[in-house]
Image (cartoon, rainbow, N blue to C red):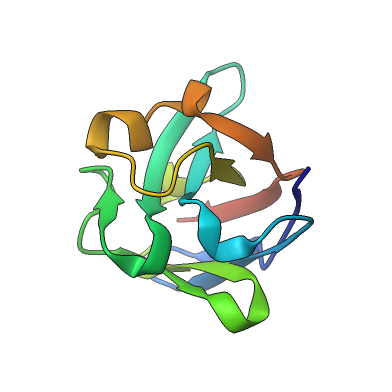
Length: 128
């Protein structure tokens, strides 16, 4: 079992920044890849970013590439999502999730079905 707790969401003006954190417990943190997804009201989970074990690979959705950065601190059992140059369309509930493997390829890293554990989500609101 893995427990995930996100924090860091909030209200920010367009062009601003936020850093989301996700603390994991219950299983060796660096034994699996981690991902961030977001969900707009009434829509499915949308892939945002993922990072493999030992930071070997990082993946980003085209919509956030160049603006968001994912990184992990294995000593703190934490994965982060640094979000810069935020846009109103980034408004959503953001979720972190633990992948079932350590080194997923891009299609598997972007597929929410491949993630076994999810946090409760944190709201990000970007106003124009």
